[in-house]
Amino acid sequence: MSDGPVLVCEGLGASYEGHEIFRSLNCSLATGVHALRGTNGIGKSTLLRLLAGAQPADAGRVWIDGIDLMEAPEDAKRRLSYVPDESPIYPFMTGEELLHFVAAVKRTGIDATVDGLIGAFDLGRHLRTRFDAMSLGTRKKMLLCAAWIGTPRVLLLDEPSNGLDLASRGHLVRLLQQWRHQCAILFSAHDDVFVSACGAAVIEMRSLLDAGRNVPA
Amino acid sequence: MLATMYARLIRLRLHWYMRTNGELVLRHWQWFVLACLIVPGPPIVSVFLNAASLLAASVSPGATPAQHFFIATVIDVAAVLWILPQRHALSGGSFMRYADSLPLPRVVRLGVEATLLAVANGVILVSAGIAGAQILSPLRDPYAPCCLLALLCLAAIAQQAILTRRWIALIGIILGNGAVAAGLAAPGGGRWLLLTAALGGAGIGMLSATRFKRAGGTRWPGLDSGAVGSGLRILARRDPVLLVQCKAVAERPATTILRFGTVIALALGADRLMAIFDFDERALPTAILAMAAISLLLAGFYRVLRDARIAMSSYLAALPLPSHYWPIRDTKFVLLLNGVPLVILLSPQIMRGLLSLLIVLGLAVAYQVLLALLRWPVVHGGRRSLLYGVLLTGLWSGAAIAAVSR
Image 1: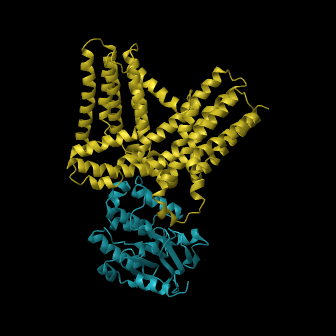
Image 2 (image 1 turned 180 degrees about the horizontal axis):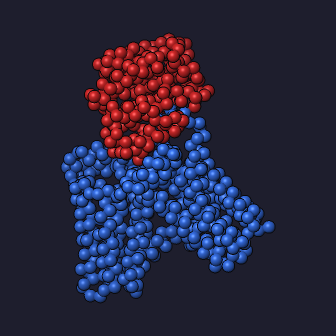
Image 3 (image 1 turned 135 degrees about the vertical axis):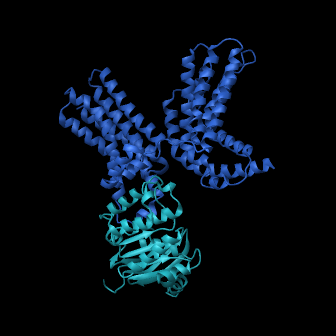
């Protein structure tokens, strides 16, 4: 694996109903675990959505493993995985169907890593449960399993430890540490214990915003 | 105190209802325009007058109990079909899941639900009022107006049973309809007893259904059970996208069954008409007009598929899919559904050797192209989607009839 940046964004801008959330935001992340920290409503989830291509940016560019997300979105998205804070999955879909769907879209299969994750998260008995019948934690685990499909180079996780039981949190910590040399992992979190357990480098959202504000419009 | 609670809750619920249902009304006003064009008589007024005549006829003497029962059932079905598209607006949204945890008295909840149901049935109540005025007279027997009131109450209970998925209450509705029908045919004082029994039976049915549901009553067999479940799991591995589309359509069982049932009925009806015409020169225009009507109905599935996907859009946007992926998959899915009416409409022509294979193939391709083109007005037409769709199918059917009649 190269030591160069895997996730890069330049001049990123976002607004909501005319209200500017941030502008001229830059970041460059190499492989490793990075925690995005900041107060509620500061724009952490928006930034993760923009980096994942889940929301179009007002301005700026994003590169995933050297591929421009705006120029070649399919190639770039094949190299990234995104786990949103809330579950946006069809209520009628089962866990098994979601995993097969993501695997088909990424043109890959469900490998031993994902099978191992299903076992570690004790998801076997929930695979045929509809999403609307799952608990918050089970939904989160299912989305985390889907994130490891297709060996991503960039993992964007919005509050990944939310709703997880202690055993699953422990497993997630080990998993993130295990993958730190293979991909750039950026997650948002408020939990300092979880952040330090992962050995994550902390990125303060406020400092990213301040750096952006100092750039002339 | 109760009045204050009622006033606060009804204000919130009506606000939500207006906001949510307003979009539906803006989309469906074109159906009303079509109804005004189709129903004979002066525009707008005739729709209400004809509905009122039907309601008045439902309690008029002279019909057999079976006929009364049939009309009462038709009224219930019409009432349920009227209310079903408004289900989301009437549910109160996710706020009501929170409100359910609050100590709201039962009487307040019932009052709010009844008020909302009356608002949602405003148009039907206009026709009911006209029907009541037609049959109400101091010189006439008051039994008929009371029966009309009972039928309307039964229809309202049927609506509430469907909205709240209290299926067992429908047994009470059927028995209630039977009692009203028997009462209309029965002479003497016994008929009043039957009328009381009708309303009492339906009310008890609704209460039993509520208790049954609270006790964790059974769900309808799910799609994931038994052999169907195994089939779905195979499909999940082979074509997970097709499975998602099938489940998105199956999530709206009432709309899907009604839409697809009407499509099949139209195709079979057109076949029957062509047979009556003895497959003469009128047969092919009949098939083309049926195709146009069917394509309008099937095009509604484009909206069903798109609406289902809205909730998942942010997650889907982060997946490596080209921008044209879903439009193409949705079009393929709807064209696949169209295969059934296509076979029904064209097989008699092919089997009897009435048309050359080239014409049949050309017509089939043109029909599928029309259905694919209809995605545009349905998805992007906004409030005028139906009008654009009717315009497109009108042009297509005119051109197709002109082409085959050469």
